[in-house]
Amino acid sequence: MKWQRIALVLITLSLLAVPLAWSQGGNSEQQIKTLIDQVYAALLKADTNFLETLLSDDYTGIRGDGLLLTKAQEIESVKSGAIKYETNEIKDLKIRVYGNTAVTTVLTFFKGITNGKPNSGNVRTTRVWVKQMGKWKCVSYQASRQDFGTLNREIFGGSMCQRG
Image 1 (cartoon, one colour):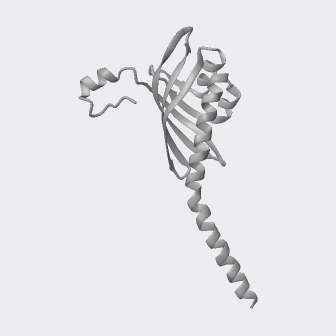
Image 2 (tube, helix red, strand yellow):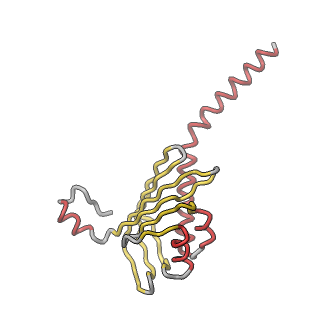
Image 3 (cartoon, helix red, strand yellow):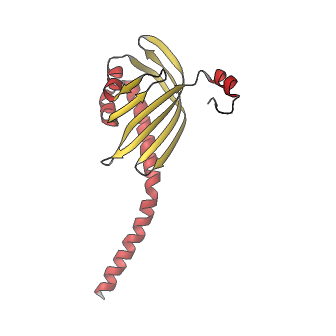
């Protein structure tokens, strides 16, 4: 009788664990969505403390102009005011989760100051996220300006490039 109770408890626990495991993808997607919102809020406030915790130590960022930045350089560009955001409006967001890795693609309209000069436009970004010790970290970032869409369509005939 005792073994039957133990077996019943084990079966019940395993049945409860399956839906929990299935729900982890959705849970991860919501966590990433929240982080994206927090990233944009932090950039608007120049909150470098948040960026310090969010970016992995081996983070690599590539700006729309091709500039390659480490974690320290990324944070310093915000801290020094070299990059200041006035507006960061998400127009499109896609999140794909692959276990402990996630990839986000975002189309945003931004307005701000870059190296003392006004700067604005549509940017498509890709971020790669990895869950490290239970927390999502951004390990890579790539930005591409979308202002050159007409030229791209002329070169590629529109088949490879779409403007959002």
